[in-house]
Image 1 (tube, helix red, strand yellow):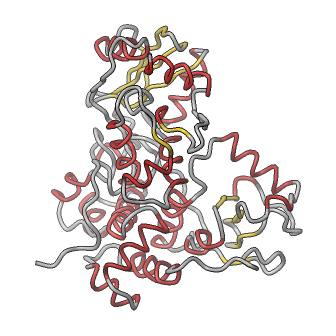
Image 2 (cartoon, rainbow, N blue to C red):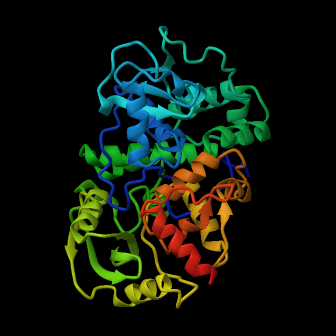
Length: 403
């Protein structure tokens, strides 16, 4: 029997790199190829997995400020790409500044080029930067997958097209992009399926055009997310509901939200209105209602965990994520209570030693803090690193766990 490309990757949402949650309304996928559905999906998916990892909004704002200031000190640290032109530049590029909403940031020229952008002829951001080994193979592979996303592709056939061995292609692809060729194709297929549903295509047509072959494959792979059917997704997820409550904890206000399938959001903060707004931004197409006393059992377990009275916590989750995110999150859940790991340790443990930045991003995009203990990941030198809910909360959590 012929194996399809890449090993199956664990996780209930291994076909979808979108990070908006189970009710993602999937914003426009504009990019340098926005007239070509396959290329548009390829661009957006690559942006999701290759963009500077672990970046908070504050960090992204700092990158943008460096671009506005034409800060030459930032050259070599990152490049920025402009969707409307399909060009990527150094931060110090003398060209006219683009609109902020058109800009995407990448860790270097290789990732920007694989995502479909070309080098700026004014600032030459690739000058002095050698291409990563195997980058041409990966670029050729992504183009082939994008043009055949709705067809079965074997790893052997893909490697033959690229001109390398299956083993080498699998390893190089995963090293550079952080996901396997199989997960990459699944992501494009799922994105096309969701786009077709949004534009009104009949369900049967969307299933076969995306390459699923049968409705059973759709329900197995859940391209629209857990807890939401394709029919509901076609209506914008407006037939679904999220309930939430906010309670006191030793780390401040604690928001707990979920569906009838499980938890979809756990947040820490200081103000109820800010926590609620964050939840509504996270799931814009869902019906969201605050219900005092909802999910009482889950809330009690989380509060006890925060207080140090319940070292282990095992609650049902309804969170949409990429295969790579789930791989990271499951490893985080295996870190013993009271211990920490460096980002690089996590990358090595999941078999992607060069994906430290992607690991950091997976931690930063964790929707359910505490249940998935991203606070247990620290910097290699012992520094706490970032934490979406505040470094002070991270410090207090770790101190309490070590007591």
